[in-house]
Image (tube, rainbow, N blue to C red; front, top):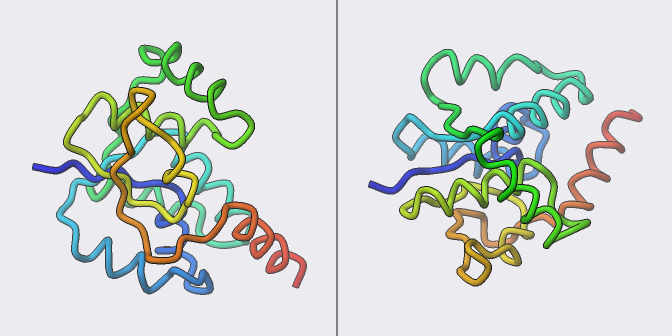
Length: 154
């Protein structure tokens, strides 16, 4: 059975109805069977982004408490591999992305639910495409960040 790994974008879009991909995120998460998997770095990033937008920053934690999301990554054990990924894709890759790519290396039958077009560039095991579920047009990371900053200024 394919394990679905959730990135920050769909998580924030699920909670923030003003996000361009809110409808897509809702459809995807409604169609996928829990538990979905993620890492602490994704949760931390989502909580930060939601709090910065003055939205419910506890919503990702509620998804964990309800069993929709499951944390399934040991950064301490995978630190060297994650560090190598970040170094390879610097400055593009952040900790959350590196953890998700490493999770796909550890769990071969997994796909990343993401809005981040950078996952088209990343490779697991150095040469294999990272399997993803993303909308036909994924937002470039810098464009999403700019939209969030603009909303906070309003």
